[in-house]
Amino acid sequence: MATIKQLSIFVENKDGWLADILEIVAGAGADLRALSIADTKSFGVLHIIVDKPEAAEEALTKAGCIVRENDVLSITVADKPGAFAAALRKLADAGISVEYTYAFVGHEPGQAYVILRVDDNEKAERVLG
Amino acid sequence: MGNYYQAEWETAPVEKMREHQGKLLKEQVAHTYKNVAYYRDLMDKAGVAPEDIQSVDDLHKLPFLTKDDLREAYPYGLLAVPLADCVRIQSTSGTTGRRVVAFYTQNDIDLWDECCARAIVAAGGTKEDVVHVSYGYGLFTGGPGLNGGSHKVGSLTLPMSSGNTERQIQFMTDLGSTILCCTPSYAAFLAESIKEMGLRDKIKLKAGIFGAEAWSEEMRRHIEKELGIRAFDIYGLTEISGPGVSFECEEQTGMHINEDHFIPEIINPNTGEVLPLGEKGELVFTSISKKAFPLLRYRTRDICVLSREKCSCGRTLIKMAKPMGRSDDMLIIRGVNVFPSQIETVLLSSGFEANYQLVVDRVNFSDTLEVKVELTPDMFSDTVSVIESKENEVVHKLKSVLGIQANVTLVAPKSIARSEGKAVRIIDNRAGKI
Image 1 (cartoon, chains in turn purple, cyan):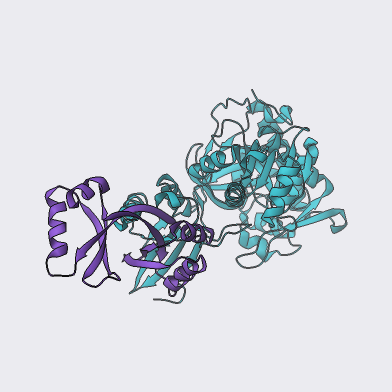
Image 2 (cartoon, chains in turn orange, brown):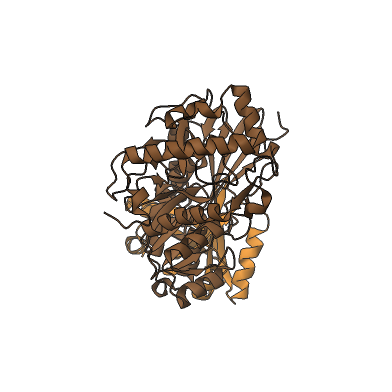
């Protein structure tokens, strides 16, 4: 488990925007680790985890994007039924609310990675620790 | 008490002003009747003779002129002096229908320049100032008007005209501009650019004189804060001369009308009836001093209120409130009158900047209003619900102010085209749809 930097980018619902943004990220030499999109009927928010968040943020800001960086939790869970549910239950019992979450499969077999945006990172780390 | 350019008229007792107006009005009616066949016909049809006009009290007897009359009489139909006595023309932007052309004698230009000089002095201008004029020069009256006013005051005048923002800012920093004259939307754009270039500490601006388009009190505060200046409103129209028909003083509670040149009236736009002082209606001007293009009872289409309350600046000139909108700009959406200025007020009070666009359309036999506004970095959150609640807040405020539902669309910064002249705020796609 670790606290890592996530970049969130405001996007309009227009054709081609995702390609545009990912090209800017690639242009900054940042490698994409995970990605998630939350959208409404008029706009969306793209969340990305990259290996060089500072470089990506700088390039995106320079290109005129609205970007926000914040800390999220990255946890490893066993790739088996109920593993992530158990972690979420611990957080719920501790009164920590999860704003959003997204998962991706890691390089190591049998492991899955989950990104968690919670209202209290430190407390969540203790609870899950 | 403030500084005046022409104290004799700016602080004249009301009775003296009225007497002066009556005298000039009488002369102007006689001059117009004699030299302008178009208006003579209107007077004849209305059964009014020049002798019927003896004082300002008789003004209401005269027929109105409208923009349609000006188009009808284009180009020379309302000219009242030989063309050889004219030295200049100016023209309106001509976004709708035929252009309107106004003529000036040298004396007309001098009087107009003096009106603009009063505005510059009221904004704190002296001969020590560097007046940066970023209104367009050319047929548009903005540039030439403030340019002439600045010359009268004796300030160093930078005839920048509009456009080329980097050069504007370079001159502003290198030559130490102290008073900026342009449209409010361009002032906001310059402020944004100055901030981005990190030059906020390098500019010496102390005041701005902004006009030629509708802007709200919130927009004023925004520009004042971003540029560290005091922002003054100025009003005018090409038909009546140009900017400087009225101007704001340091009290910033309305614009003093240069009554020794222009007599204002407020009328009911539907009946033409003159309304008592303090009532809201359409502003009508009678130009009593200029000779080449004298307009009597010209309907401006601007909706506003006049006030004669004592002003702390010491001027006795009647004040007009910022126009609530033009009947030309007014949108009728689902039968409801909507002024873009109302929407701007809501957006700025919700923390947005004045970068917005209104898209009106007709879907399933019903009007729709979409308000596109740029999200600011401060408002952005990684959590969608936080942004959505901001969006909903605006929808609710708009509903309570306008009385109709508007869809709010948040767009990326800088995605709404910036204009260097008048902002294109409204896109109406309803034409031809049932």
